[in-house]
Image (cartoon, rainbow, N blue to C red; front, side, top):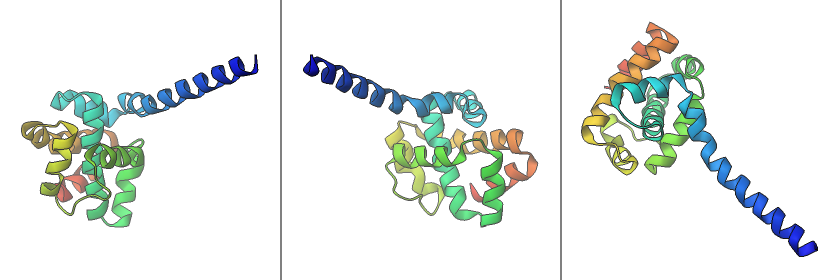
Length: 143
């Protein structure tokens, strides 16, 4: 009886661990910026979230702390997006320029043409969500 109870407990823990891995995708599928980027680029939600996060990660290193705060506070779950971009792109830290994201995009399964569409999609989507200043800040550093 005790062995059976432990088996059920182990199964429950394994099942809950699998569900935790899926949580970010559901969070990102309701994120307005990721939805906007997915719609504009044709990327699925995981790739749109990863690409968006990689670009936001780069922006976070290029913008002043005050400007990054404006961007980050206007985009829901921006910190989770940056983490997702780093994770999916295999990056421990964001690269120093846009060209440095190419290997990360490739690892995410994002083609060159899709990667080129990401920057305007992220900037336009961020502007719709956070206003012209947020869009302008991102356009200034993601070139």
